[in-house]
Image 1 (cartoon, one colour):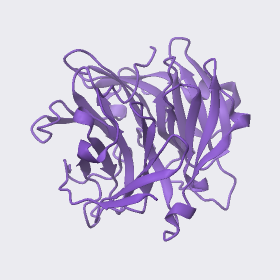
Image 2 (cartoon, helix red, strand yellow):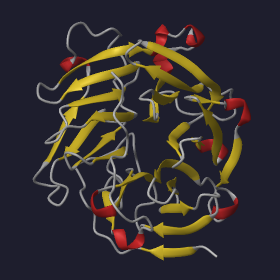
Image 3 (spheres, helix red, strand yellow):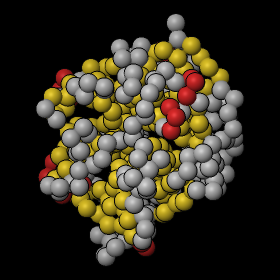
Image 4 (tube, helix red, strand yellow):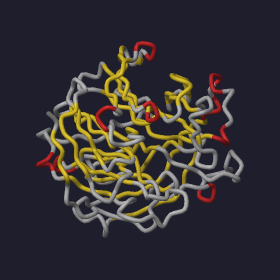
Length: 341
């Protein structure tokens, strides 16, 4: 029997007019916490996790701080779906990220950035109209490759009565290659690996599913995917309980998933069974989570009105769930391994 825990938490940090905070990431060596605001195209960083307000900084990604000539029209704003920080002993100075059109490289010291690889370089993606699309969530594979979901941008929206335009790609930065892994998905979301590194998990938000995919010799066998978690029956009181950002706590193989529109973070054991769930009142749009400093679980939430702002409630804030509620014990590693670049 799973356990439901209603949490009484104050926001960890709530930046002004936050719209779609996502992709929260802990970097162990520097003790930093980073996240993105997808809609506002911002990268946020906290350097002292116990003093987030005073040590918080933000850089907006746009054509205006691009190093060199911006390779696309400025008609559509940039977006940041996910970050791949490069950690150092004292600080994070470089952040790779999935932008609207490809993988970018941000120099935090200068605030300038550039694209390293464009999605349009992939022959298998030649049929895509990149003005309609943007990056969503992703992760760094055990071998350093980047896995990134691509979906419709905000000005297009997701229409599940039409064929899906989204896909999952793999990017190898040293080789400057983009490989199409899975096409025809509405909202590809989190990508994770289990403790043994022989299973890859892919969140398929509008199918209310996390897929388990055999991962052999650095290759996901997409054709052999099986449903690991079905979110519909365990959230039957909600019309659209979409699994969003998630993390596998490698200390005990527990998978924690934010469930958009439900105020929930749900925890699953290694078999995919629901073990417990956390409810964050007055913040229905829970978007992502990571295990961070001290074993606490850091959670991002979205504004109740992402595109216009000014939403009610505590949506847009980050929350910190104490480690006493988390089953993993021992040292916490970085949320993502270092990307190869």
